[in-house]
Amino acid sequence: MKKLMMIILSLTLILTSVACFNIGGNRTNYKAIAEGRSFSDGVAWVRSEGIWHCVDKTGKIVLSLQQDETPSSDFFHGVALVNRADQTAELINKNGVVISSPKSGEYDEIVDILHDIGMIRVSKRIVTIQVTETQAGIIDNQGSWQVRLTNDAALVNGDYIGEGVIVSGGDRISAHRQVDWFFYNIIDGNSLAISKQPNSSENNYRITGTISNFHNGFGLFTTYEYDDGGTRGFDINGQVYSMNNRGQTRLLFSDNLRIYALSRYTEGLLFFQNGFYDIEGNNVIDLSRYSFFRNVSDFYFLGEYCLIIIRNPQNTSFYTIIDKTGKQMFEPRLSEGVTISNIGHGLFSIRQNNNTSIINSSHEVILELGNADISNFNEGVALVRSGGEIYYIDTTGKRLF
Image 1 (cartoon, rainbow, N blue to C red):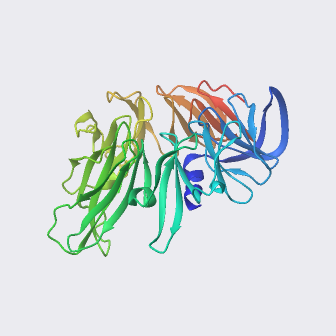
Image 2: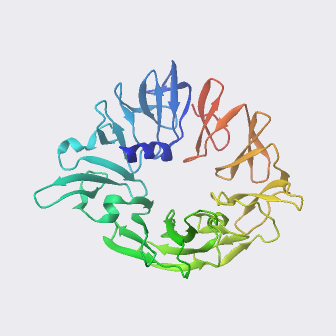
Image 3: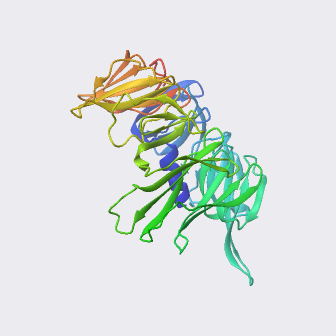
């Protein structure tokens, strides 16, 4: 159930306010406190008067849950997880039909939805005279087995990374100080162990590693050393590898790498130190003309544009937007007292003096929201909370419902 709670936190944005939406094409006002979640697979979850409903982009109700039932995930590839009143998580389609359930006895629990490929990981505790263990398997969005129950370490213990790849593992503190990760590719059934051992002659440092999001068939595998006292942080023998979806790795960056100088890998690019690199380690956008603050982990492309925060020689911060050629879209603007966020589709939100505006890549204001909060655009729709009201807008600023 801990996995399901993580799904709720990571895949949805929840806001609280008064909702107004269509039922069967007729507009009906609900005078109850409601929650709204971001759009996924063409629909979104909203709650009104204690009942969760799934609605389309016009606000029309697609399906409704029962009292005391909650959605445990958004819809992906036509299915979603729903937590029943008895705390059983079941897989349903958009008609509300149960596709798969632990009540079948085939497994004990639905662990998570592998949303990139529309498959679902399940687990079962096996107790026999020979062995007591947890096994895991994969079913598709029709409830059919794709990977039968197995004790494969990656499937049982792993974190879902993306694009059909599950990776698990972590530190193996030993005389060899080796980092082992277990890798499973659902698509081709490939399972293997990945080991990395950065060069070091100092015995008082401990090696660890992380694997981050897969994108376009590749992810990032990072290793670094730190001493047990924690005094030297991430500055010792940091290395970054690219990893494809078959577990093959290639060294991209090393030499006292500072992990905080590395961003997420999106749109085929990742930020490192003073520019954007491709997955081959080539510097494709040189930004050495700028000076950056320490933490640049949020410098990543969401579509065609990227928001960057730079500084002048006196450490005053400014923001600007670049495209995939590195072109600056407008002169850097002072960021003190300003909160700016990339919300997608070439749009950004700026909050200053309790006023939120939506701007485009040329810094033209397309919508004033007042004292409001706005989510990222998912599938061309964003969720807005303004005072006691919640509503959805499209990328033109038009209110949908």
